[in-house]
Image 1 (cartoon, rainbow, N blue to C red):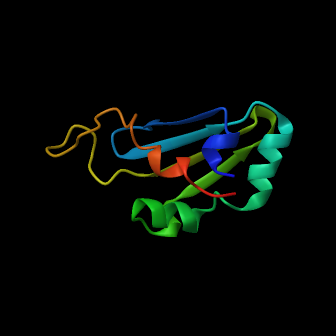
Image 2: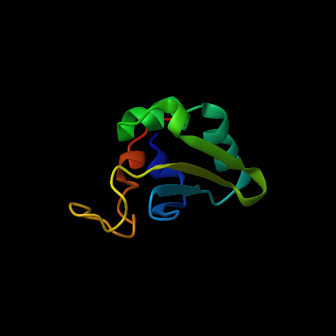
Length: 100
């Protein structure tokens, strides 16, 4: 099963001009616990997907909200020349195929 098959929402957005946040939200507690306990969304794996160092990635679990938030630096500051996603809204795609 892939993350996109179990998550209700997978999205990305800027967290300021130099950081990106990825949000993964679940419809129920069971789905949240399944993913959170799987270890599939860990800093090392996310860093590999995005070409970053693991120490630059924070994975924050919110059990009450049935959500996992991931923050990381953007490769380019939002709006810099060459930035093709000023809002950071198209950066969640690598998460979709993560196997659980």
